Length: 263
Figure 1 (cartoon, rainbow, N blue to C red):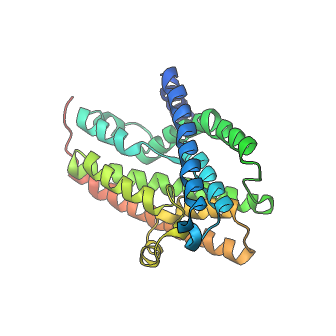
Figure 2 (figure 1 turned 60 degrees about the vertical axis):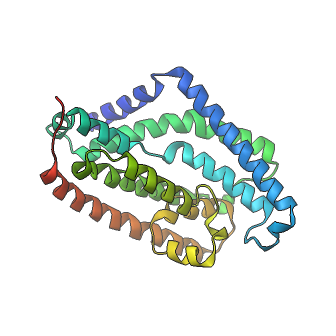
């Protein structure tokens, strides 16, 4: 257990290494949230908003909560694994007395904890003060917490699988940019998935992306019955199990293809 805590501490120290970056990141989140508020407010003040699936208040609440969750749920495993392979340090990482995936996860948890404290909670406080109405449905908070944890694990496994693709590709940033943009769109991070066109919404129901943002944010912000909540949680559990198996297969086949470069 101590070795996992040590890697969590490493993740915390890595994020706190550049103080100016912390302020820049927090201000960028504030600016992003303000731009989203202005954009959606302008859209709902026009006649084009008549056919949208969600109202103004629900949409703004969704965007705020999604932005707060994004402060700590995002994972940099792809870039980190890519850099380790390019530098040759991956050889050292693989011989450590700890599972590679567990090590990356512990490091990610450390970074997520400090991001939650430095960005997530202050952003939630600022949003709650200026939004003027509750951001969540209190009776659903226990289920929302479970959903956020599941989304966190799903997002990590997705990032880890993309990172392990570097065992074949060596350089993964082009693939990461493409799949990252698709993930951001289909997960509901930028736009509520309920507003997607019918064809895109049906396609998205067969993909794991909506389990990362759309499902937990919906449980947090929109009133729903117990059956709907359980159904959404079941979708997350399915994709978590599927991605875990896929990650194991990718790891076993990828380590056989690994080519170490550099020192």
